[in-house]
Amino acid sequence: MTTSSLPATTSLLPVTPTTGAANATNAKPATANASSGNSQLNLNNQIAGNFNQFLGLLTTQLQHQDPLSPMDTNQFTQQLVQFASVEQQINMNTNLQTLVTLQQTAQDTQALAFVGQTVTVNGATEALANGKAQWTFNPASPANATFTITNSSGQTVYSATSSVQPGSQPFTWNGVGNNGQQNPAGNYTLNITAAGTNGQSVAVPTTVTGVVDSVDVSKNPPLLSVGGQSYTVSQLVNVTQGSSSLSSLTSTLTSVSDQLSTLTKQLGTLL
Figure 1 (cartoon, rainbow, N blue to C red):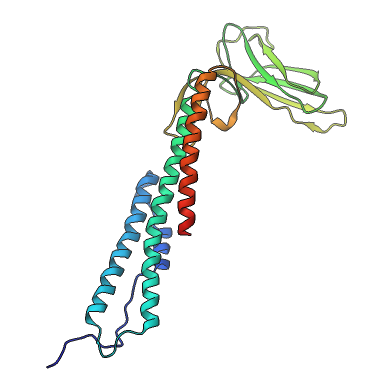
Figure 2 (figure 1 turned 180 degrees about the vertical axis):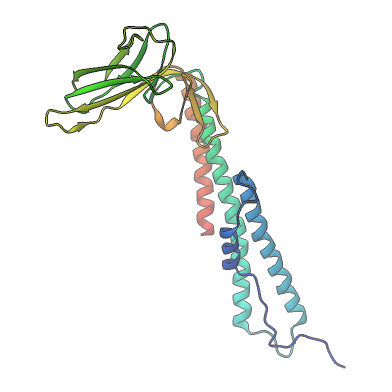
């Protein structure tokens, strides 16, 4: 009786993890606006497809190999290692996506807690309201500084020169331009250029203070709206109100941090 079988020399051609990873790297989104979530889903589907294909090929080979001349042990072991590596990639990508999601959640939670709070941010644009606009500047050393204020169209409406000393100090403008006329309410930008006694340029950073009226969590990182201008949380210098809200924020971020730490340990076991 003749038994139908594949020749002993028939070799399995598995889709190795290297090939899967290369395809994932070269994959391009269908549209320029494809979300990162969809890209990750496509990546997982690619690797999962390779994983299932490998399993099917391996099972078929085991069913049809010649019992009198089985597959070489080393070759079989290598294929099992490839099988395990693809499975690890699936688990790792899933956990990495979870890590990214947790980080985004932490950023959104942190940003939303600042709504209604009075904050000081690194910036140079301030609103002129009721005949007053105020900035804070902090020269690094004694210098002669030129203060230039421009409107939203970029036109210079005020310019003055003064000697300054190091340290944080306010610069207040009443809205009156060099032409002696009152400028309308709106956003104005202060630019300070300064030179020390040796003629070297002196850095003069500026900050503005205002209330966070909204947060755009569709951006990454989220953007805080202060006086009609957008800032990231990293640009915050000081928060002067809402200590109870900040306590709640600290508690929430601690919880998220613990989750990130746990997930990081899980990823470590897969590497």
